[in-house]
Image (cartoon, rainbow, N blue to C red; front, side, top):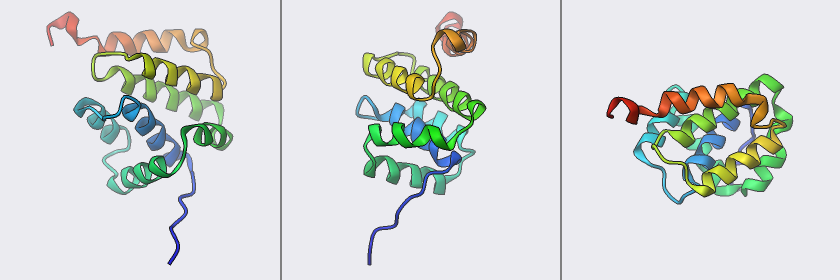
Length: 132
């Protein structure tokens, strides 16, 4: 009996993107896991497929394959969700920043091209300003 091959589709690209980002520092923080579950609508099967895909697929292969499956709006949606996830635990680690830069490059965006959206997500996640 052979291993099941997981085929990328737009939903799996979203889940895998978030998992790659959330796990880049070696663990998935509780806030990141909550963000991930929210974004995929609590679809446990999709999360399981995403985890399996990430375990079996090197990041560079994913970043080479995934963008071709997406239109510009889908790539932007995923980038913004990845950035939101990056911010959800309250700190931006250097490896997260570096990974986000890779996503930007492979998804054919620049920070400048989505600056307003990134700034808004930063403000949204900066709950320290209200004492949380």
